[in-house]
Image 1 (cartoon, rainbow, N blue to C red):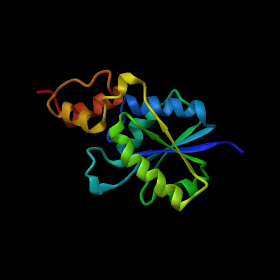
Image 2 (image 1 turned 60 degrees about the vertical axis):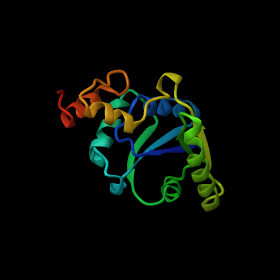
Image 3 (image 1 turned 90 degrees about the vertical axis):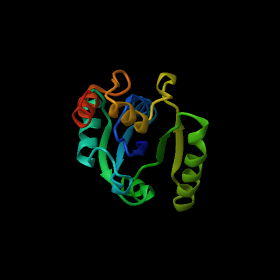
Image 4 (image 1 turned 120 degrees about the horizontal axis):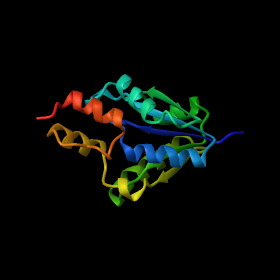
Length: 161
């Protein structure tokens, strides 16, 4: 049976660290489901549709994965997708405590699902969607930190000053 993993996130917006984790995941699993969390309570800059489009364009050269939107419990999506694993990106020790807690809860809810923590390439460890949005909001270039489609969409949201 093929090994299938789910890589969940807000991806608001997707950045090069996310793309790197997707690429690394595809070397480990037969199939990857990139799951975009709707969660409007976090007041995302981009709609779910925009986030799905940006991920699709940023990863157009990759195979063996799908992009889906979801709300609700991640572990329910994992069950619906018949996945074996959850992939989480970890940039620094500060990410670990929260991710570890979530992994344990998911294990409690569905003991057959494993969580794998992947580090992006070190050149992306400082990048976060929050910082990307903050830098872009001041009209500063984010070239090299995000895929070109995201640069374009950020420029539309935050026109250069």
